[in-house]
Image (cartoon, rainbow, N blue to C red; front, side):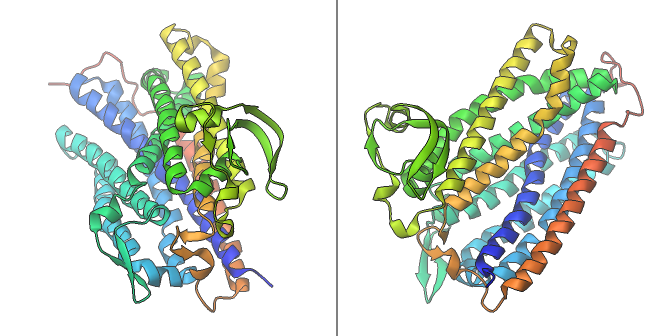
Length: 446
């Protein structure tokens, strides 16, 4: 018999996983559009305008595919998760509606100005549109993250007549995990956009495609690469501590802590075995998990053995996704340090093998984003709303597994085609030469 709830979860996971690529890139690139548009407004250097125009084209491509991959997501709630929608629609649906009719609407209008209004509006209006896209996209992300955070740490609600009723709007919006998850996600998006800008600029420089613009892009992005990477490491720890306080079973699964103990080690590598409650081939630092949680190498760390045994998440998936995410984070941090060192020493553009490797970093933050999302959502299981509604209770009644499987296969083919198209169009855009060759010293006419 086909497991309908599992197939519904896989279908939604694939849909959201593919879509998640594009909002992260969008948020990251809006930062750079604002940076270079502001630089053009202040300095008048034509090269800043050229860089901004190129990034706007790339941003528009990403935004378009973000809409294409995300448009089916709301329908999934009604199709496969009808009980969840009926139970929490008053609160969860309100946040999604606010996002769509405010932030997303502004973002869509402003990005149209960026794409078509360069020579049709005043420079101040164009800069305002760039800032509007930046702010609206981040506000959109806030509402989405707030809604998801409510599912992780629900607050400001009551259950009346079998449905969730909003009792305190601000407590629901700013639930215990909203702020730290928002900052963590935004930094991840900025890091994603930064690595993309670095990779694209390095590629164009090596290929001789507008090398002057590539130099400007790398000179700005490499320092921000380091700043976002080190900031993400710090905020990532705060995010884990938030999980530690509010979702101890998820935290224990992340760390592979099957049994409570003092001087708990932190695993740098290992193969989790939930059946035998052990980590095989473990490489660990003794006592360091205790230190990270309480600044004492001998403090006691709560394990899965003290958690509700009916609500233990899939440990193998949580541990593996979390540790691969952290590993990628340190790879990116090390890369940023190396890049910043070479830039300061004025050796970056002469070190061809480094420029050759930088474009291959582009997938890493995207993979880390996916792994972090997998760990967060799988770690919440067996709850769809933590502590309130189990996933098994949230699926639509009467929808057979075979039908979900058919839709899953069809959607997978559609998303594969969309990803292929995005890569094809993206490569064409990256290899496109600008219509004019800007001079770094050129000033706009007064």
